[in-house]
Image (cartoon, rainbow, N blue to C red):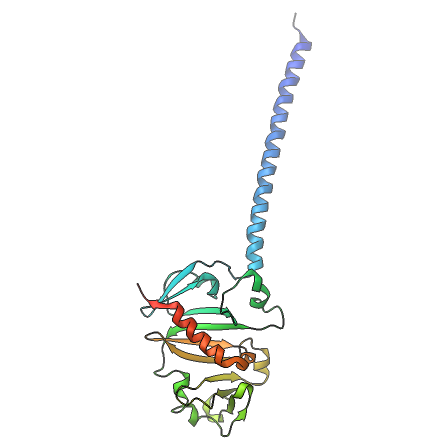
Length: 243
């Protein structure tokens, strides 16, 4: 005679065991999904928080016209350029006065989230002119500006450009005390200057055949001597022969 009670109990135990295993696998799957979501959230959340910046300080060697610029990735402005290799130009951004790249400590500064504006935008590129800005003052700029100028920040003199110059919305800022290689910069005026993050621009010859063009907030003209010396020292520090 068949023991139906025993059969039913065995069947129930087998079904119950299978059901519990399915529940176990479901919990494992949910746990893995949870870990995945957590990892993705941290990864993508960090990417969103960085907003195109990076705090990676790995040194990248970028070669322009046979000269290498060795800088950490967090100084390189655009993500596509954060790699070693050859390039036609390298765009950087630096905090003043430390001349450092992006960091979590200065996140608000690099995101222009407050009134504190101390970011310098710098570009290394091959020289396109035989003279840098200082050496263009006498042979070129003197023919394009109005005299006399007006005294502005830190002993500097600002000159308006004549209408035919093509620099109608800019002023030439000059250090009148240094006649060999004076500090010379161009600064935007009017409404454009009020909205620009870095309305002033200067370029200097660096290395064997490169130009360093840097744009900066007008407020930094108050410290123009340290600014110019700092940018020259920075260029000398990061430039090295290719190879």
